[in-house]
Amino acid sequence: MDEELISKRELLEKYGISYGALYRWKRTGLIPESWFIRKSTTVGQETYFQREKICSRIELILGSKEKLSLDELAQQLAGEQRKRESERKLIIITHYKRTEYPLEQLTGCIIADGEREIDILEYLKEVQQ
Picture (spheres, one colour):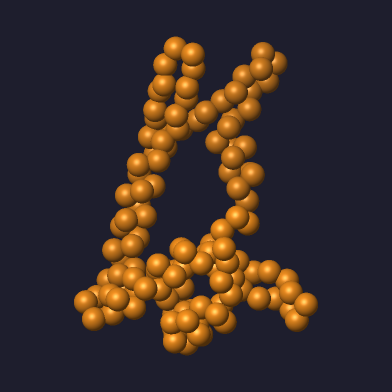
């Protein structure tokens, strides 16, 4: 992993937050499950985060406490995530042109090698799991 990590313990100490608060923020969707990186250590398993990503999110949460409820902030962040996802696209570049397709409009993407066809979308779903 190229990005600098911060342990859960360091994160809690740095911001003076409790274990319960961190996991409440996770349950409400303020901190995505995918941000929790579990690693085996000599004393068992520890949780880490990408330092820049989690610190900016904790600062946003702490800075928004007076203005928004946790649920309102979670809804706002979810809306921003949906907007980013709706802007994702498949880009195919050939020697002749560049063509962009919004991902939500794709129903299939196939590679044909003369004898067989491979559905790229299904292949990517399998690889992702």
